[in-house]
Image (cartoon, rainbow, N blue to C red):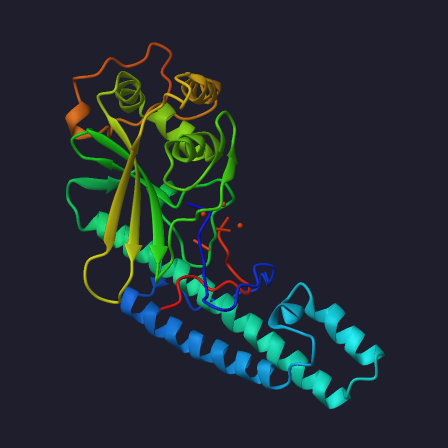
Length: 315
C-alpha cells in the first residue's frame, strides 16, 4: 500500500525527499530478480554509510545530520558560508550530504522494488491466486499514487479478494495513522484502513464494475475481503505472509463505505467497456449479476518514500 514504512536505526530524517532515481530497479522490459535487487541494496547501503561517515567527520559543532538532508541542507550551507565557515569544509559537507541523500534514495527505491517483485512472485507461484488484472501489477521505476494499493489478487475459486501490500527488506507495516473518509484515523492492516483503500484507489471501483458477479458475491459475504501483506525479507526463501481480514461494514456498524463504493461503481455505467467474462471460476453460474451491470508518503513501499533520509528496512 502506498504508505510504506522505511526505518533506518539512528538516522530518521523523514524530510529528505529527492525525487530523481537511478533506475537500477529494472526497466519495463527487463526487471531485476529479488537476489539481484538485494545485491543492489547492499551496494547502496555501503555508499550511504560511507557518505554519512564523511558527513560526520566534517560535522560543524551544534549541527546534526538532519541539518544536511535535502530539505535543510541549502539553508544550512548558506548560513555556514555567511558566518565565515571554512569554504573547503562547506564544500566537503555539501558533497557528503548530497551523496548521502542520493544513496538513501537508491536504498529506499530498491527496498520498495524488492517488496513488489517478491510479492508478485509469491502470488504468481500460488496457482489458487491470480493478480486481479494487469492494472494491479507493479512496474519498475513507477511509484503508485497516494491512496493506491500495491496490488490486488483474487482466489480462483472466488472465495477471497485481497488487497496486496508488498514490503521489502526489513520494512514493516506503517504504524502512522492516516485519515479515512468515514472512520477517522487508521493504520495499515486495520479494517478501516483497508476499507478506505477500496475508495481511494479507483481501480477497485473499475474492477468491480467490470466483474459484477464478484462484487455481488462480496456484498453477500460469499467472497471474503482480506488485506494480504507479503514481506520479502531475504534474497532466497519464502516470504512472510500476514492476513488481515475485513468486511464492508464500518466499525460503527454502518454501510457508508459499501454505499460510497457502490456509487463509484454505478457512476462508471456507460463510461467503460462491457463487463469482463473472465470471472473467477468458483463464481461462474453461482451469482446473480447486478441488474445495473455494475462492477500512499509510503510515501516507500503505500505514500511510499521513494527517496530521502528514511531508509526502508535496513538489514
